[in-house]
Image (cartoon, rainbow, N blue to C red; front, side, top):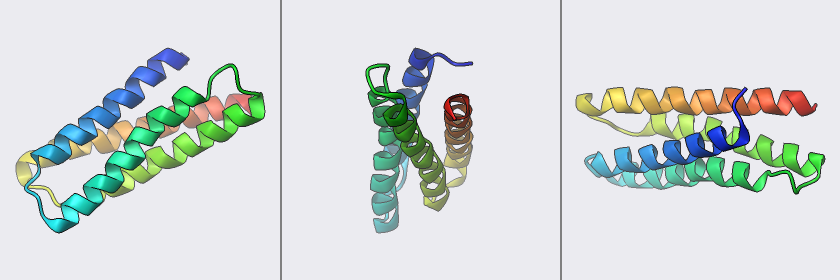
Length: 114
């Protein structure tokens, strides 16, 4: 099972990679709006997990993990909406897979507490 710190690092890496990919896209108004939403969702995965630390009571901890899991799922949705060229498809697929992996890890941790 991934430790808290492994997951913390992974979530921020995911958010950072999302931002890099969005910057590389040819901007259309749709991509700008979808990109903003994606950055909000992906960044929140990391932020919510970091806040879900040992100092919180177990109920709060699980609640924040559930929010982070929802945002990982939303990140995947927003990635699919982005209009990409052929050269960006592999990068987008990699991020979609990463958001799904984050969601699964968060689900596994939540299950331990339920």
